[in-house]
Length: 324
Image (spheres, rainbow, N blue to C red):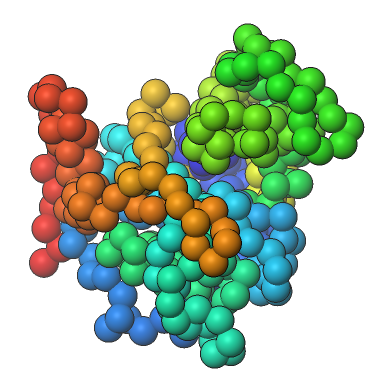
């Protein structure tokens, strides 16, 4: 997202041409392959945008056997493009996963991240749309290894460390409580940890959100924007780490998001009702009633008002433009 904001900030022909070059660098996948228009949620508000963000170790989104997406977020951009909401969906959420194209998986309840392994991006889209009843306009798949390069391209990030922990992955780094400056490998390692925290996967989601915000802040800093070499390295590493749907146009999306900064993002977690065990696996049960309220607010471009209702405050909410 930070790369989109930087591209949108320039109006010169040279910047536009450079943006087109970046757009051509993006890898593409048929994210909506096999999805019937009649079977998908309707678009209710013109101008609003919903993007499914997936994180995976798989470098090939069309060959995802045994490769689950451990990061799943829905980004909703208000119709006036002044605010965005990033909703993390716990990877262990126990939901209905439609039948996979090969007919060998799905067709019943399973962890939501199973969808990507069983049917690639299209089944992940179908599962999330069915769970949220929100139409996805675009899909962005982020390669974790590539994200490491993005962090390095901005010179590392400062991250708040909740508690002192030792990584469960080699080389078993120790992260000390407080604020630490992390390079790409360190940041990626930290946001993958969950077993050391009382709230497990929810802590990991929180740290992933913090990392996204930290990268955005660093990318939009004066030092980055004024150094052409650093800026180019950041933008190229961003596009090289992303796979997008075939209709995704970098410049069009960048222009739509040009007024957004990290302070204009609100991070949320899809409502849950506790954990349990299904088929000898630990799962997270969605809070169906609260989740339905949240995603109805997303459908109708009323997330700001929904949040205000939750904490009893009054916050201005943009008036959506009906999709007539």
